[in-house]
Length: 178
Image 1 (tube, rainbow, N blue to C red):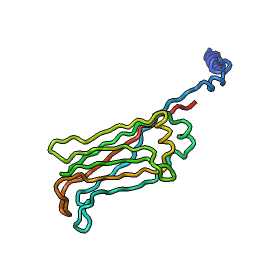
Image 2 (cartoon, rainbow, N blue to C red):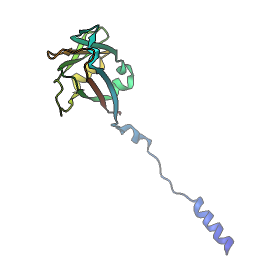
Image 3 (cartoon, helix red, strand yellow):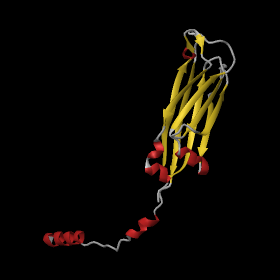
Image 4 (tube, one colour):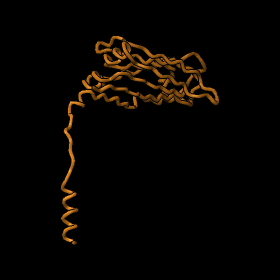
């Protein structure tokens, strides 16, 4: 009896059911992944706006930004949200312009920020810039990003001035892959 039971159980495990698989279903597959990534950060101390004892009215930087040369991003990116947070603890206001440039340094799009002088209890300046449709095409043609920081009128800064201007940013990328 024990031998019969073993053969029966083994037979049950050897039997299986199957059906025809339809691999054509993958043709209708549409994936919509979302990716969040850090974009740009900086932390500028107040005394960095003073060079040789002279206050510098503006500062800037130019960075290569060739992310969209990758075919996957260029073909499948449907939307991009850029989030910025600027925290100013310097007793001066600032005007910051982030400009997207093409390979020939031609400006494509500008994102301005007005940052007030520091006051106690002040919350960071935040901004979200959404790129879709024609704006997304401009973003995809971007090869460089220029940052220009202008000091607004106020109390003079010196090499012993305290505080900092901090920027944090991230990008949320929305894809449609078919």
